[in-house]
Length: 130
Image (tube, rainbow, N blue to C red):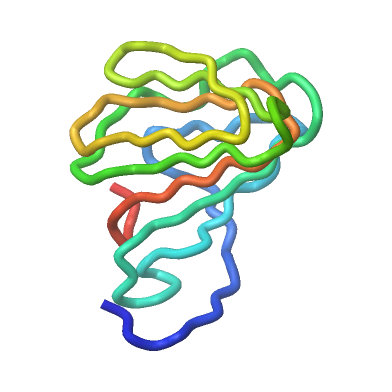
């Protein structure tokens, strides 16, 4: 547990388990905003990625996977500006911003942003991604 204030500078993350890096000028780098490598003792792992205006590559860049802890996705942007497919336990849904996606521990899931602009945030309830 961290009991002191902190201001952290994010770092880019080039590789993430279960994720292939998409290739599009509309997709920004993934930034780690919080994790135990940035702040020892952190109990959350927070990443963000921005998406420019337009349609994104059709191929999925995230394999369906499961975590042993909860995960939250936030799709941030103007009303219906950011579009994504989310798969939760095999059920695929189209989601638009602004939205929150709650993924309980043990649920197979995948998120694919398909159109921007906007920002996708991921919050995992542990200090590292696993």
